[in-house]
Image 1 (cartoon, rainbow, N blue to C red):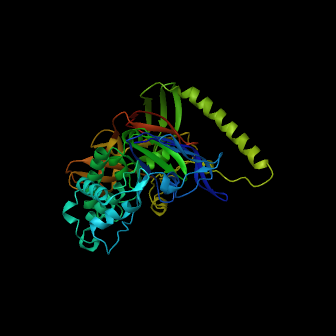
Image 2 (image 1 turned 60 degrees about the horizontal axis):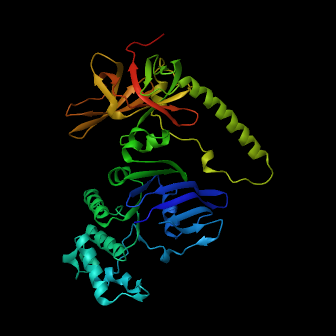
Amino acid sequence: MPEIVLEHVTKRWGSFYGVDDVSLHIPDNSFITLLGPSGCGKTTILRMIAGLETPTEGRITIGGQVMFDSSTGINVPPNRRNVGFLFQNYALWPNMTVYENIAFGLKNIRKDGRKLTKAEIDDRVQAVSRVVKIGMFMDRYPAELSGGQQQRVAIARTLAPEPQVLFMDEPLSNLDAKLRLEMRYELQRLHVETGSTFVYVTHDQMEAMTLATKICLINNGVLQQFEAPLTVYDRPANTFVGDFVGNPSMNFTEVKGTPVSDNEITLDLWDGYRAVFRPNEPVGILEWQRQRDEANKDFLRKEEERFSKKGAVPKSNKDELFVYHIQRVDELELAAETNTQPPVNNDDFVLGIRPEDIHLGTDSGIPVTVYGSMPTGMESTLKLRVGPYLLTAVVFGSTMFTIGQKKHMTVEGKDVLLFDRASGNLICAGSLELQNTPQN
């Protein structure tokens, strides 16, 4: 099966960027998910590869063959790209049987310059029906099938023409939670058995994490990260990725950092508490700060030059800062507590802590108060109040927690993340040693 290469692909409507300078290399026989929030541009990318949408700029190749090139005017129509497209809605013909629905698209397929014979069509229909396990339903009509069975028919119809690439645009959205889980297993199996390249659009991070060999995470039309699922989870490229991937979401805290050495930073946390952050690998914090300051000056200079030019200059999506969410106690609740001061945003870093890395005890660590508790049986998801902040923790086991309960928090492991507050980019991962007493 072919590899897919996108080079500086952009889709723009007037001054609005739907997709902003995306470059991707999708290996053959891979299962790639395009992940991101609604309206981020992932479906537009899929449609441009398939030929259903024309890029404004860039180059797209499939299997080494140029499908689109803005510089030469090449734009191969969708029916000549040999790709299959599975939509969110199954679009099965209600007046045709399962067999007829699968066979319908094969009637216009050409092989060696001729149409397929009835025997060849039957062979393909029977072959794909065995792959997706719907052989016993071939004489039924769509109305007589469950949602999962209709989805299998739609998959079989897409696979029957033997496309070199299979595109899927949120194909499981219409199924209930239990059936979605079963179909994820089926899609994994289909990918292995067919050996095809799968490109799958979803806003569901669980689908992306469980199905993909690599995740392509998009936000605001801009490629944020393209890595294996566990890499995206453990080492997010920036605060947006860290915030979007993971359920519950990562905890973010803006902190003031004082580098003690190239490999140790003292961080000012909540209510006078401090911590020592030690990177897992030498990163040269002092040199990083110097380079960051120079880069910021260069960026501001270029922006001033860009906007000083006459004429309208379309605003690139890359001008937008990375976003993250910091949970705080309601302002009315804070106002009732005269001893609690609002946080000051003059910090250098953003600290990212996964909920499962927060551990609770009774006598050591930073004091916290249970603000909310949601037990699910094998684990409990907690909201912990630390001064004006709310942190999310996942505690495994059947321990019960009550609102208002006092605990002490520690952070364990070596996967605490340190981000640059100005750009949102990941600096490094490391360990966090919390001090038990606040500093005056």
